[in-house]
Structures are given as structure tokens and as C-alpha cells.
Length: 277
Image 1 (tube, rainbow, N blue to C red):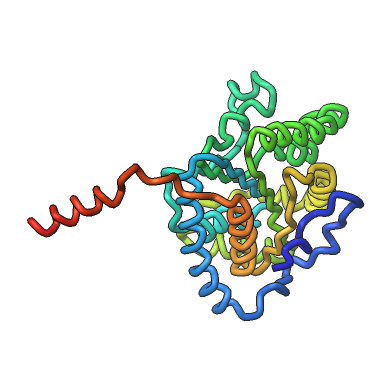
Image 2: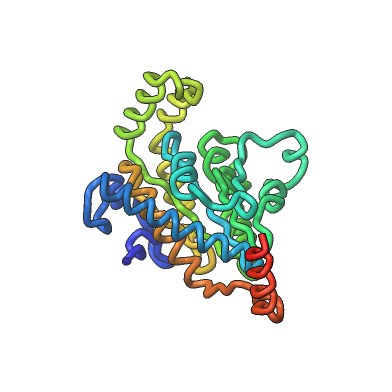
């Protein structure tokens, strides 16, 4: 699978207008086919995650960033359905608390990174400090502009210590966002997710696109790559993320721990116990 077409290159600068949010070119099929394919991927990912947990050697950090309604929650539910919650955690970074604000901005993030054998999914992340902070002028440019290097080095530290990092920007357009806002308002089970402030954020769309472009161009690295995931079609978004995560886990060349010595003898004894019962 040529998912490299979605990976932000290490050299040169991308423009988000060059990425089609409606793209689904890597999948030969329709929405129904895509959902069926995802179910098979769920089973494969479940086994790989179990192996990750059992081996207890590698760490996997997955970062999701998107505009409002971009689909972070939906992707988490769809892609990681069936994984063992004992080895998978989701960390969500909302408005910093007073305690968090009393530390550096990466303090709260570092505490949530995965340990050996763990998979951690960031629903928003340290990148809020070069996105929301920038767009809303919560800090001067001389402050937030230094954070690109901070974050690159922070992620380099994690990678050097054995963490594999995948970063997904879920790319939608203005029209799709409007339709998703409308769907929320019209669905009584989803109205709670709608915040009038979301429309104020929507008015800053161009500012956010510029902030996202700078984020992608300045922080996609060999050790922590960014992928621009077309996300107008939810089924394709989920399928593509699953494929990339599975490929990454397979490349870790994981092994189950060796069984106890003389496992055959224990097998024989257990068979005798079952026969007696």
C-alpha cells in the first residue's frame, strides 16, 4: 500500500489545498466495501496489539489532530474497536488546569506517553500549543514559534527511548464541517457535542489552515511523521489509519514471550485433569 502519498515529506513545504479531503484512491471499492474491510483490519489490529502488550518491549504513540468535527472521536472508536483496554489508553488534552499551567506546556503531555507494551492515543496533543495558542494570540509569536523545535526534540527523546510515533491530521473541508455541525444539531443524541463557540472557531478557518500547514511542515520528522488523512469520507479515514497502524506494528517484528520450560508436560497434565472431570 502506497500510504507514503499521505506522509508529509521531510523536505519542501506542503499546502493543504493540494490535499483532497474527498480522496479515497487507495481503496478499490465503495463505502460498504470499506466498512467490511475495516472489520477484518480490526481483527488483525487486535492480534497485533495483544502481541505488543505480551512482548512488553515496544511503545506506540498515536497522535490525532483535526478541526472541530474532523473525526478524532469517531476514528478512535472505529479503528481501535476490540483492542484490549488493558494495553491501550486514550489521553485527551483540553484547556489546561491551573496546576498544568504552573508547569511547562509539555509537562502534562509527557505524563501520558506510553510505557513498554502500551499503545496510547492522543486526542489532541502538545500541538494545541502551536495551534489554538497561535490563532487566539494566547502567547506572542516569539514564544509559540520556539515550540516547533521543543516538540521536535521532545518527540526525538521519546523515539530514542523506544517509542514509535505516528501522527495523523484528519483533513476535512468547510462544507463537510458545516454538514457535520448540522447533523449534530439535528440528532438529539449528539446535540450535547455542539458548542456555539465552534462556529466562532469556524470563522477562523483560514488562520487555522495556516497554523496547521506550519505545524505539519515544521514537525514532520523521520522519527515522528505526520500523515494528512483525507477525512470527508469517514470510512476511508478509518480504513487508511488502520492500514498505517497495522503496517507500523508489523514492522516492529514483535515476538510473543517464550513459554515456560517443559510446556508439553504441563499440557499433558492439563489434558489428564480435563479427562478426569
